[in-house]
Amino acid sequence: MNAFSSPRIAGLPLALVVLPLLLAGCALLGPREESPREPGVGPTVSWSEVPGWERGVQSGAWPALLRTCQRLGSTPEWRAICNEAEVHPEPSHAQARFFMRTRFLPRRMVNGEEDNRGLITGYYVPLLEGSREPTDRYKYPLYRPPDDLLRISLESRFRSLSGKRVRGRITRDRKVVPYYDRAQIEGPAEPLAGNELLWVDSRVDRFFLHIQGSGRVRLPDGEVVKVGYADQNGHPYTSIGRILIERGEIPREEVSLPTIRQWLRENPGEVRSLLNENPSYVFFQIRDNDLDGPLGSLGIPLTPRRSLAVDPDHIPLGYPVWMTTKLPEADHGGGQRPFRRLTFAQDTGGAIRGPVRADLFTGQGVPGEWLAGRMKDGGRLFVLQPAWTYEPSGTRLAGEPNGPES
Image (tube, rainbow, N blue to C red; front, top):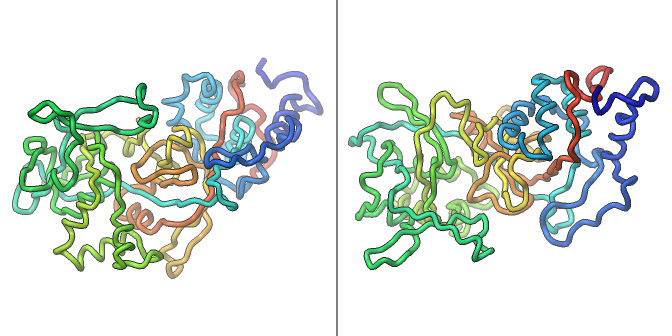
């Protein structure tokens, strides 16, 4: 007998009659919580206030849910959820929707503005051309984490540093100073010589690999090597798109990956100085080629169009996030279409800051780059919080609908 087996009303377990009502309206639990004055996680809302929820294809997010369970499944609030989800690896859309609705509470993310809209962008896994040895063509190195990179942990003493990546190095006179920035690393002194992992043929492609955090490098013999984020130099990320806007080079409404790449092609003499405006520098490691997709900050492979990079100061890693935004379309003259989807917070990024800010993982190669490069629109986020711990139901989705899918 499972937690939803008895008693029954008109053939249904009593818990199935009461539970969705409690989770949907929250009115029975007391007055609605007021929106917080400060940005962050807002009040619990009813499922009817989550745009597009009843028409969603929530079963498409099941692989991302199971991957989250690889990391969170042993925690008290996730254990029962994950045990039951793993028993049903291929639910229908209606079953997946019902499962999520009866096990999570939707909470609106707020940014202090009236409509609580934030910025939604995309990121992808680029493919670069490279070599294991430097040549006249392959002359731009990807570095592994250097031995002199200090990982400094001061959170226990300085709370303002909580969650921050503090990096440094020791000078000859034994002073701890910030680690080299981008301009120093790629300058004539070459302080990281000897730490090369691979060499690639494009300074610009290498720069965007740093931003994406992981990618693939195709070697001259056709072998493809996966590289992933290993560490960072501790300097803050600076957007070169924002710099081009401030300089009047590209209008704000036209800034995208394609327009930035075009500007760089048309101004080759300014490429190096512009890229150095971003002092942040990423170090890489070679990933197992058997991995199904790049690894996110949660340590699990990312799922295209289902994995999000978020600010973990506001959204816990691993949590489901309902996202509403618009996606560009290639076949409609540069138009957009609504995009409302169940995703999972499985990654982070240096440019992803704030409660209503997210980066959607769009996939690999040219299709992923095309979409990610053009994604830049407003959107809203709803984080789904586990409702409470309960016992798994066994071999059948607890309360799965018997009728046709909606």
